[in-house]
Length: 236
Image (cartoon, rainbow, N blue to C red; front, side):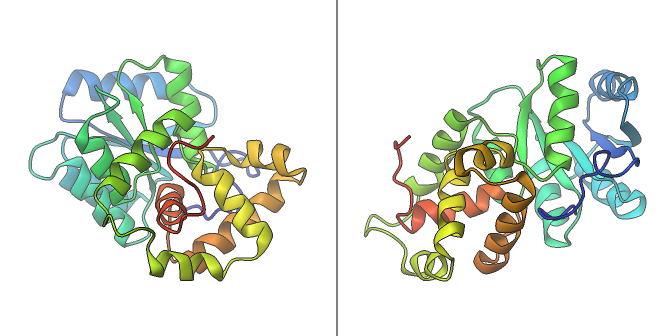
């Protein structure tokens, strides 16, 4: 898995972003692979018809990103995402038909880096692959707010989480600032411009935040920020 502070596949290096496309519909799967195959800097290294095959191929081919359908036979995209995250596997970009699908929320909680709608334009698909490979989450601020509202609505009504507060307390002032921006859905580039620092500095902060919060994805870090009361649901 690409770490926040490391060089992005296809960016700082000349190596293309390696992608596996996982979808049980043959026409959809081959169509997505064909679209990505025309993009400079992106290489489709495998195709999977179900989640189990996606996990197996990921272990063998070591891609940077898995483009993952949610509803698949044998093993669905949620469990496949959870298994990949558990072993520090590739980043997962979830494909869905509906932007408020409950299964999408579950996939993001399982460790996915973001999601795209299946009717996304080819250029949006390619951009999404590159964004996720670069360590950012592919979530618009409005989507992030809905996701956090969904996650926090299931938490206890007793207030903020003490464990989350303790975890956030271990961060420096600058790291808390970066975490707050991250929780609102800002990319590393947007945080850099807002905080008047370089993007590489932001990546370093994000890496340290992940380590201190013991998370591996931006969505998970955002949930901790909301649980701790660092960011209030509905705030800008």
